Amino acid sequence: MLQVHYDKQRHELFFPLDQTLPAELSGHEALDDFLKLFRAFGGEPHMSGDDDALVSLSIGIDNWRKLLNAALPPREARFHADALQGILSSDTREPVDGLQVNFHQKSFDTPARYWNFLLQQGHFTRYFFNRVGWISGPEHRIVSPFPLHVDIETASTCNMNCPMCYRRMLKETGQMDPALFRRIVDECAEQDVYSVRLSWRGEALTHPHIKELVAYACKRIPNVSFLTNAFFVDESMAHCFIENGVSYVAVSFDGIGETYEKIRAPAKFEENRTRLAKLRELREAAGAGRPQVRLCTVWPAIKDEPEAYYEAMSPVSDYIVYNPYINFTGPMEIKPAFICQYPWERLVVAFNGDTQCCTGWNARDIILGNATDRSLKEMWHSPKMNRIRDIHASGCRMTLESCAACRHGSKGDEDAGIDEILARRW
Image 1 (cartoon, helix red, strand yellow):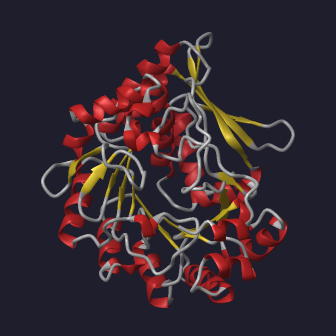
Image 2: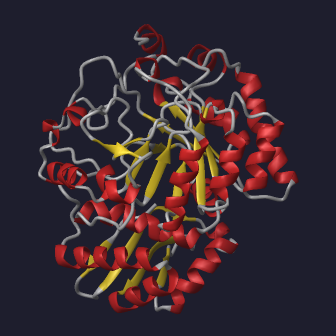
Image 3: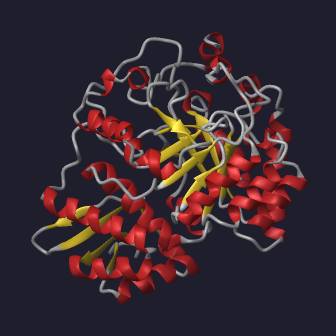
């Protein structure tokens, strides 16, 4: 969404936007509320001279401190005050060597659809500050009082066996006990967490009590999302999402037509596309802005005809992104200086309660404990977690077995074709 810079000469924070916010969205209620608050504390939005699009924001340091205390829960305000000290002491606009925040997933859509996707989720002011922390925490090694985001694996079971997925290599699969789920969500709510995602390695909608879990989380956490292949998104499930105010669903939808069906068996392209269309139709009929629908595809599934994919899928989605294909079974081309952002941002809780600091599917030596008998806060500030941060900050991630095997710090296989990917099936 943005970058965070300190302008020493002007003694202010400067926030360039990754994508300009088009003038056509300037009247959006969520944006208007945020800008009123930002301006009330001396902040300035900066527009493009050509088309009046919003390109950046700036605010004086003293005014920023006042804004933090006015806009945020006390814990979050204290974290941002600490992060500010890190920003001020860095005296640089250059990124930390090897650290690239949110580098992996790429936009495949227009700025207007990108910003509308964000604004329609609600709680935009909280989202803005969350993104500032998401950037400045890793860049300046500032540890928040509690994770900025928590992934809760409601289910590691799935109805598909996609060729590029590692799931079949899992030694254990299952579905989270609802009592454990409620315990995790309650702690997140008590600690003012902005966002939780109700999925990780499997299909969340295979959990037999997923509707109850969705309702429980949405009553307590501002931003609730999950990953899905959409196979189980029938009208009843769609109504659950709409009525409970799920922020967005991230739908894995690789390619169109025959390509999609090769990858996503047993799903059928037209049937799953229709499910998405129906979800948005019911949302519009209810006069709701949520859930927003974000599609994600692996690049090889669309690289031959990217325009055809966008033409087919943009009418049934709100925003589209793509991931480079990563070969989980072949040799890796390592990025030697890579520093992972996750140890400063999130915790991930597996269906059985095992908790780690990233989404690495086969991590063992970075498991911090189990949420059945330890709090997330305790694990977040544990000696083991701090040691992992120190190892990453010093550029020595390869000394951790899980991190050395992780593909997040490797280069994707841009030239792989679908038939080649299918042949590499796990």
